[in-house]
Length: 194
Image: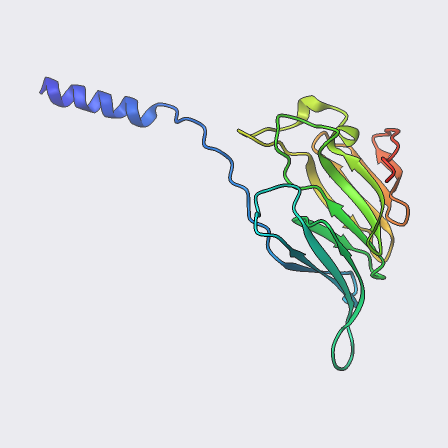
C-alpha cells in the first residue's frame, strides 16, 4: 500500500511539474497571392533559395493586372526579399511589407516592422525599435517577441495604411511616401531612408 502511495505521489509530481519551455517553431516560407481591394490587381510572392531558415528570406514578387480575356498582365516585379505578410494597394502600384516574427528579447533597430515600396523600389522602412514606444508591453516567447497587435491594412480605395503596435500606438502611413501621417496617441518619428 505504501509503495502504491509513493508511486502515485511521484506520478503526480512528475505530471504537475512545470515542463521546460519548448523552442519556438517558425513556419517555412511558401508562395502565396495577395489581392488588392477591388480585385483588379494581385501580388504573387515566391521564396527563393534552398535554405529557408536563413534570414532575411530571399524571394521575388510579381504584380499582375487581372485581364478580362486571356492571361493576366505582369505589371511589375521586385526581387531580393520575401515576407510572410504583404499588402498591395488598390491601384497595384504600392506594396507594404510587414516584418516577420523577430528573434530576440525585444525591439531592435535591426528588426523590420514595416516597409513601403513603389513598383519594387524601397521608399521607407521602420524598425520595431522606432515604432514601439513602450518596450515593457512587448510580449516575448523563448526565442522571439511580438511587435504588432493588429494590421488594419489599406483604408478602402486609399493609399493610407494603418497598423497598431503591441504598445497600443496606431500609425497611419501614406504608402506613396512611407511617411507617418498620424498616430493615436501622438508620436513623432522619421523613417529610415534607403
